Length: 497
Image (tube, rainbow, N blue to C red):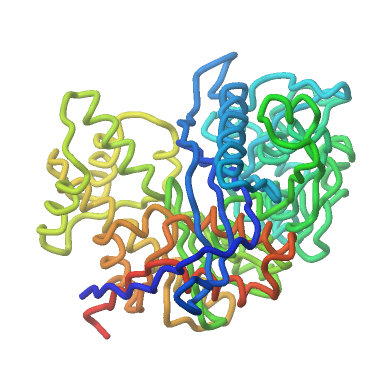
């Protein structure tokens, strides 16, 4: 059964700085203002926390262009500037100014920039198929065991290393991961933020530096990526032209945060204990535990776990599992067919169905590309020897049952491989609002599930900026305490406990 456990929201009239979080996912982006409150009000002392205000939302998505699936980066950057201008106006209305800007996006994708600073083409999307053919060539030069022993990275056909191997000409160019590309266009400074660098397949998981021997083996320029920068360090200040377009002071700092959105989300997991599991649930589900050291064993490689950098040098030991992309693609297909059931109605109908229905492997690569998702799911069920009726509620229940089962398997594997034990699973991101998914996860794992915050990524982004600006002191434990103080959380218990 689920029971809401709402943390009191912090009352605030005390400014601890004003921070703009540029938070962009695979389907949408936002610019969010965040401030740190110590909770003092005219009525007395209260709990401190983080207060967020979204000032601009915009769509994002892939387009078929120039021979492949690409991001419309020019439009994306225009929206970022529009959002920053809105943030500046909102600050000015309060008689304030922005302390800094932080940027987080999805991982692995990049733009190629010339020495003159020009973007040579719109960046490819990881959903494009071009990298699939490059995998075998990379593995002829660097076998999978050798790659994993150094990078600790989960094998995914769209990892940056395989995308780069598919490029035809890299001479004189630099690769900037998407958040670094945005930061470069804002500041003119080329840097690679470390949490995102760790997703490329070209980063040494132990040394925390580029694995330069892999660049040599694959014939990649050693300076292909700009120098590394850590979360909390200043990338630069706004270029004059950007300041003019946004109305922000040119002295406004752009600060490196956990620029891989999962790194920012995990930094804001409201955990009270050290050993916990997390699920950053959105288009994808990132499921794992937080460690101090990577796990680079052959058993870990066989289980396809990844070791990515987190804020403060932590390791996000996780596996990519299918996500709510399956559900959103089903909704898109049904809408195209003229059937537009409300999500709440779909979830209620799915919850009313009995347990024990068919399941699929939610992270099968067959589900990566956009297409008729309901039919692909039904085909996957047929391949297991079962039948899934062509009814939206039953398809939704199959998706959520499959995700919960995948979460349970992944958490159990992480506990075994990393030799840790957890009793609480934190679900953050958009999936934390899906009460049926949260309850099914509690049942599948046999563990307590704490759901929220929805805006974990923006919170982590803001908190790293706030610490860099002196508005927050301490480490991850102190930042997470601020999240608990200011965010409403739900708890779900397994009926097996």
